[in-house]
Length: 227
Image 1: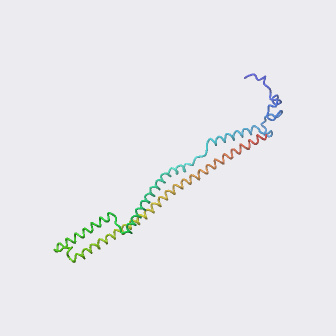
Image 2: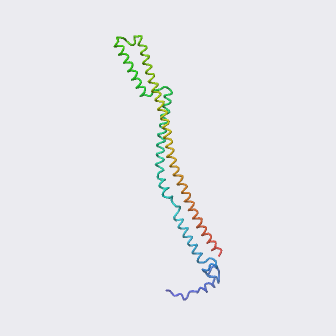
Image 3: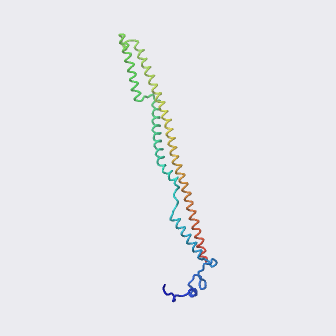
């Protein structure tokens, strides 16, 4: 150990005004003398606590919310897919209804109708030929041709009604797909809303911790300044 015989004593330092309170007021651990050792320790502990809180930062969301948020992209994708299908069906249904209302046939329906008409005409020609008669020159051929036209027209009306029913069916299916899409979208929104509320609560708790910690530091510091 070095020689300290030449250093001034505590009394000599006190007399020279080396201590904050002036001569005669040495640093004390007695709380009655103002800011003491216990206050210093408290201030230090509070400072360390604040440093730990700041270093830790805001608390992350609980695991259940993090896991739930992972499902959001999939839910939104499914919602978009269903909504797209619903939109396609709506457009198809609307087009089918408009065609039926205008008395139009689809290309497959028209092809089937032409085939049906050709078959009836060929059969009638064969029947007249078997009797040695020409359908185009026989007076009874007018009635036969009118009967063929009536049957073809009846089939066309039946096809138009089928198109109309298909159109209404597609419109109904469109509503079902849109409803399902809305359900998936709402589920995703609910997850995000719950996670947001949880984060707000975590942020509030963090803010309360900081307020309490800095409030304690300010209180101890105020006592030090008043000493």
